[in-house]
Every structure is written in structure tokens, then in C-alpha cells.
Image 1 (tube, rainbow, N blue to C red):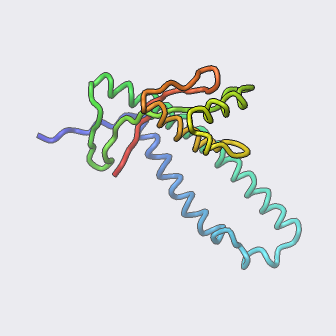
Image 2: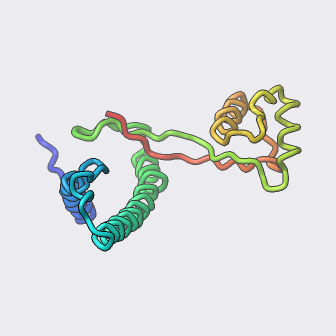
Amino acid sequence: MTEKKIVRKEEKSISALLKTLTKVKKDLAKAVDDGNMKGTTEDMSIAEVASLQRKLQETTEMADVIKKKLQVTMDFIRYVRVPAVFEREDTEKATIAGIGTIYLLSDYNISVKKGQKEAAYEWLIEQGLGDIIKEAVNSSTLKATLKGVLAEGKEVPATLFNVSPFTRAQITK
């Protein structure tokens, strides 16, 4: 027996948007000549090239707005909805034909608390982790290092660092 795929209106709408954006991407590739536009702009007047720049600026701004809205929706799906569905269905991983394997991945947002930089650095040094301290601690390095500390079952001082565990959905092919 084959499982009938139910496509909800939200998925149809996103699929239609993806199809439209794919066409826009193809049209854009034709229009901008990989960003060079040498052959099409060298004989333009100031007004023409200024108009083109303005249209590109508006297009870029619109693309940024679209990307931000899509990112908010994708983040809601991967940080909230998928983990909730996994919990409801009491599963940790699923392999879906045509999509791949989706699973939950635990992670942390970690940063030094405002006004606690010196104390945080001192704590890192006391823990033997001072080698990551430079003029400033790279946020990715800090995150990776303190993830390791947490994985070892050690505590990270809440007075010095913001540590916010989260779960997100990850898809691999």
C-alpha cells in the first residue's frame, strides 16, 4: 500500500514561491552577467547607469526583506515546529524519500555577559582555557570551547556567560 502524500496549502505556497524565485534567479543571471555588466554599461550615460544602480539597490533591498522573512519562518519550523512534532511522535530521527534524514541537534548560544569580560577571561584562564583569549575571544571559539566544558559535565558560571541551549532540526541528504 502506498502512502498518499498530503500537501498542505502552506507547502504549496512555499513551493510556488521557490519556483518563482528559481525563475528570478535565472533571469538575474542573464541580466547581471555575473556581476560584471561590462558590455552593457560601458556606453551608458550617468543617468542610465545611476538608474541601473538604483534599481539594483532596490532589488537587493527587496531580496534582503524576502530573505529575512523566509529566515524567520524557517527558524520557527526548525527550532519550534519540528522539535514539537518529533516530541509528539516520540521519535529522534526520520528518513523521508526525496528529502533526506531529519533529526534534532542540541546546541548552545554562548556569549560573555555584558560587563563580565574581565571576570570571564579570568575564569577561562583558571580553567586552563586561556589559550583561546586573544585581544577578543572569537565567538565561535568561545562557543566550541564552552560546549566542550559543558559536555564534560562542568558548569559554566551563569554570572559570566549567557548560555542558552536550543534544539534545531537538521536535514542531511
